[in-house]
Image (cartoon, rainbow, N blue to C red):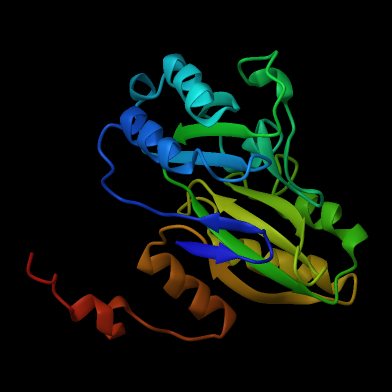
Length: 238
């Protein structure tokens, strides 16, 4: 579990959860007592549409006392930016499409979203010296369907702790739209406003090759997977 002060959110990554619907409802039961004005997003990676269906939304709404939505992520990340029912913005995480949630007549400050589709990668990028009013233009240049990288979506944010701007990058196909290329484009665009890309933090499972590509492009550090000590450590005995 990772708590991110910029996002004012906790992020959990879990592997091998089994049947998604049952796992989601199990987690929801554990989160039922979390303060009411909290939005909860379940992102189910590599799930078949038949395993996450509409009855889960009704059960989730009842268990959490929330309005709930089930959404298949069936387009590249740059197009998903404008279709997401609940997403990050300069106002924090907020509902963008309230009509997508059930039950529609529930009066509550809690919202629960279940997305499912092919695996994506999340990278939070801090910005140095970039004015907040430039965030929308940076997102347009790199991370929506008008930008140059089809499989990279970019969401603007303002840190809940420091007030500094940052971006959340989501990649749906790193072979077609590498994140290191997105970072290079962001640096070019940020320079127009006298700023630059700062520290980046991975918020999801990340393939080692992708991290090494970023290191090679940004530092530059030409390294191979065999040079990373963790690749030589076997699994601990059960």
